[in-house]
Length: 141
Image (cartoon, rainbow, N blue to C red; front, side, top):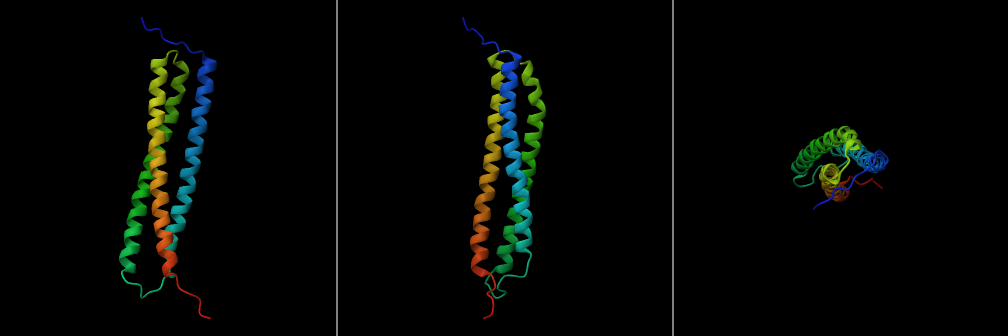
C-alpha cells in the first residue's frame, strides 16, 4: 500500500517562497539580458567598424537576425515564467506529493528554458564581441 505524504499550508508556503525566489532571479537575468540586447543592437548599428572589412554588412545582418530570435525566445521565457508564477498560488492547496510533483516538474521545465535562453544569448554575445573587437576603427595617432 502506497502512503501519500501530507503537507501543511506552512510547508507549502515555504516551498512557494523558494520557487518565487527562483522566479525573481530568472526575471532579473532576463531583464539584464534585455538591456544587453539593446546595447548590442546599438553597437551593431553604429559606424565604429572598419568599412573595408570583408562581408561586414552580411555578418552584421546575421548577428541582428540572431539577436531578434534570441529576444523572441527571451519574451517567450518571460511569459512562461509569468504564467507559472501565477499558477503557483494553487500550490498552497496541495496536500500530497502527487500534486506537489506537478508544480516542481513545471518549475524544472521553466528553469531549463530560462537557462537555455540565457546560455544561448551568452554564446551569441561572446561571438559578437569577439568579432566586433577585431574590426573596430582605430584611433588615428
